[in-house]
Length: 459
Image (cartoon, rainbow, N blue to C red; front, side, top):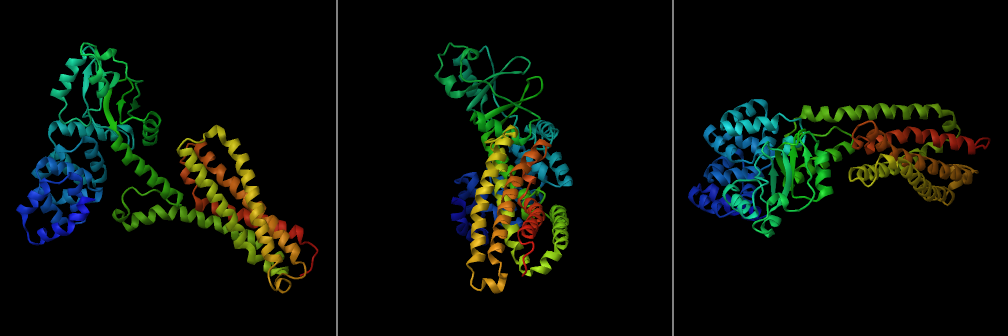
């Protein structure tokens, strides 16, 4: 937040073109605060300021900038400046940048990398999108298992510069296969003559390079680690994923789920960076499906037009009843999607959830149904509005609410299980989709109940 507080002062220096004062001020700041200052500036000013930074600070500050700001800066930097920044960036952050950039810009960026960094970038980009291989960094420290603790500490001291983290060290054999991991604290506290392969720290846990990002989050949540190694099918150590990368992954995953629950495809870039055509494409698919779904609601209404003609007031309760079912279904869907995501429930729990939600649906339906019935029975001018059989109208509305809310709750809770069983994302069982499904069935339930209870009564 320091960067935001200092922005007015920097704005004055920028307007005055006092580059020397800006350079001195930046060198005393944290890279994250420098990024905050740069973030809201126009591209022409941010490019000038970026050139004032020392090479290391430029690379670190660049990593904190949002993707769209990074893309803008890339277009303003010369090849030599771009080369300096990219070669100093962490490989995992550089990979995410390359994924965000347009293809022609990515090709230009790759030509600026050193041969060693280019090899790393190509290796990382060769893994499937959203896999652990895309998020890992190869900047980790390995140790041979036959080293004594004292020699291992000296090895860390001499070879640890520039590594992503030294909190966890990795023991490998001569073929590069992962044997164990070792916390630095355990190494420091061990007897100097103890071989590091004999230091008993904790169980070894690794992530396959092809694991998707949901699995990455699961691994970190389950094992409570600050870093986890990424291995190939033969157990070879390829890289590590650190907890700061997992926070980014979790944010991306949560954003996608929220957007899908809103009834649309997930966006692949920040909102303001998505073109209008792409935005429409992402939204029109589900809207079309939901629109056709609502056509069935109109068809159902048309089927009961004779009942509506005999008691026109019945149609006035349609929004009340179907919205109750849609709202209860949306609640259940949201609860179960989240429960599946955090593993509070699994596929085998579907029957327990069905029983629980059916009971909840009946209880909620009875409560809302009583409210609906009382609204009719106690409403002033009820006989003029609903006829001499207004009590039976209240009973019909009450039972209809019970049926619709129960169905909506059960449907909303079971759809995520069905989609997960089919290998799809449960977030696709969005609230709009459930609401549309319940609209159609709600109309059928309501008019069926009303026609049965009110049959033979004149209005």
